[in-house]
Length: 122
Image (cartoon, rainbow, N blue to C red; front, side, top):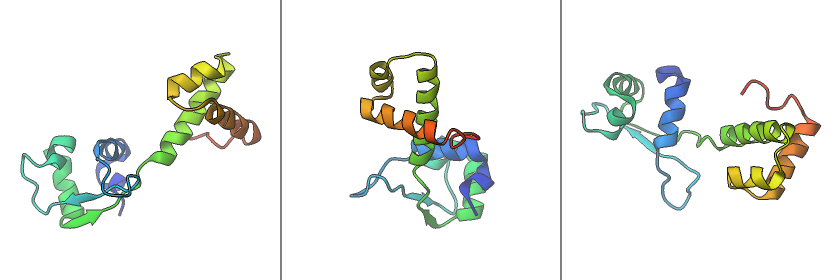
């Protein structure tokens, strides 16, 4: 079962965004779900008591390694880059806005031109 099916997609994405990176692999996320989360547990503080208890019922005692969301961020960024280019914003300004290189902006534009339906439905 996926986290999103227990607490909903938006809350799952929010939870993923709140998790810190760990160890030698900063792209990997680790999330321990206690069987009985107390009121002071970080999961309760992030999600609220009701959703934390749902997570505990479904995943209690498990150490989860959810996806880090980088693919979603890249798709969103590419879609927004394309929108800004269409509005006539300079590549340099777009790169500064997203804190990426100008080459990354140009690559996003190229991908969008080659496959214009790729980013629909995000």
